[in-house]
Image (cartoon, rainbow, N blue to C red; front, side, top):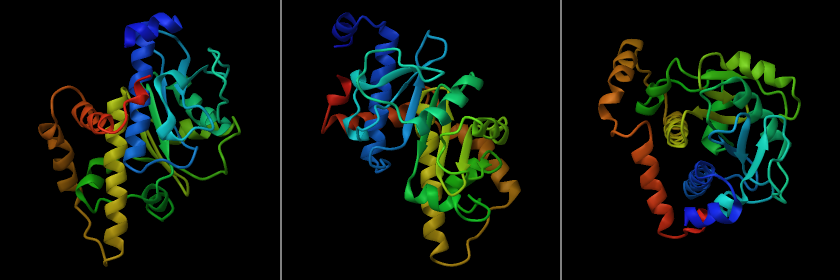
Length: 253
């Protein structure tokens, strides 16, 4: 299938594989309830093409994204293919600044999940009060809400606030995660979303128990011992793709 698509479109094999993996990620996000109408974005750098990345076509639901309808644009927002769909300016403005300045930010995901927006909208943000939240203690950057992200000058502040971290809660706005691979970005988002969901549930029950700094340090040190070989998130992501394939394989086209 990949070879036929490559021959038909003229694109190189690495780009088609990247397109399929990103399209699968959109379908996984939708399956897990992380879609937001036709909004939000997951972007991925095109292998071997400096400054080029893939983004979802503006107007399609996550469940409609497939490998062939992803839009390829350059770092300045110019289309690099003949895709008829437009690109959401808010998605381009936010994602392009990170792709431009961060060599390791190959995949970037931004969502408006209920739990992510709720935790980003309270004083103190995510707190180390559950297993998953302890994964992220000391590793989350925060950026104040400035309205819809369509102004390029906000990019400077986004980069400054992110610093050397690759996970950000956009205050009053939602989740932003970056990964060296699609599976890594996926597993970061999954764990952060779970942490936020559990924080909401805990807050509804009473006063949360906060995990001490010493225990958090041990937890983060030992996390790698519970990981499956293959790279961060690979086994998890592959399992979710298998679930998507049980109902729809159209994302591969």
